[in-house]
Image (cartoon, rainbow, N blue to C red; front, side, top):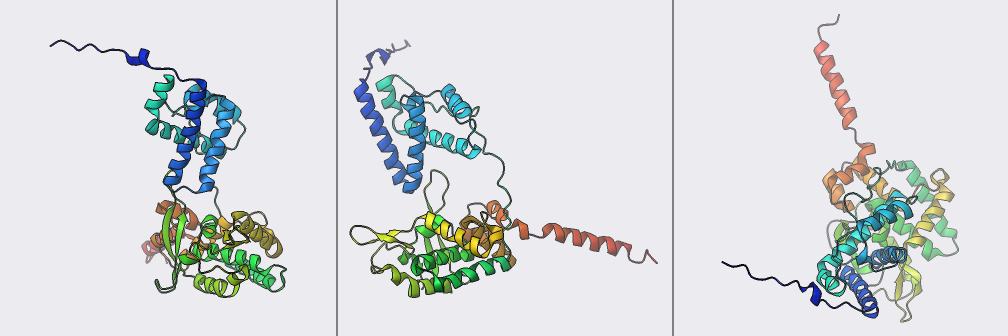
Length: 358
């Protein structure tokens, strides 16, 4: 059997003009944004990815699909040499994600236009390490948290702007009582409160933290640990201070003081909630100034419900962790398996010595 003749088609490829490539590059970036939105990624996440890509593009001075591993070596190893490990790791991850998109959607098109075979410049040789393991977070004691929120509650009586302070207080209470992340609080709607579910009511958390590239992960959180009382007080006594519109679909649970041009409520951002907590800590728990963050309140919640007897799997579900190993890092300061093993060892040793000693 004779072999068929194979023609080299590379000579038939038409080189694109500079204008065509510039237009194509714009379309590719717009397509990347749309694909990330279709995957359910938050606007802030998409915006952060775009900032990273624009910075790399500005440094490189050419379309990113022309990057080679040597270019990534230079950018990650020289330009970002003195940056924090998390910064290098994040930008490398964004670049890898963008090249995944290029290979899946535009590999053939880029070759036809430029003759370049798309290949990710971040490989196993230059990929930044994830960095050291997260530092141990030891949350405040129960007495300290009680002092903080008691003082904050007293502030509500005499503060100049009641509604914003009460809103931030209620959001911090949810972080402390049921372990919500600050971003999850910001994206809650009034309709996400489902009083008819379970013994205490439940919250539909629609913007939970998901794995990179997979979009938000939803979960339903029971209003245990006094969170139901906090929410009833906030909805009945506080929310109305922000104005009307509580019955409109998509109305935020924690609104800003500002409104959209059509009069609908704008969601509060993370910054006012962080600032309010920081100010309360400075006033009522100064020894924790600069250290007690919204995420530390989440750690405190995990530790306290563990101490009260909740098992690790239930805490994992409450916090929305994918792996129970992550949950164990939140409660390890109160785990007593080492102490228990030591006590059992002492008891075994004592039992072996019974009758041998006078």
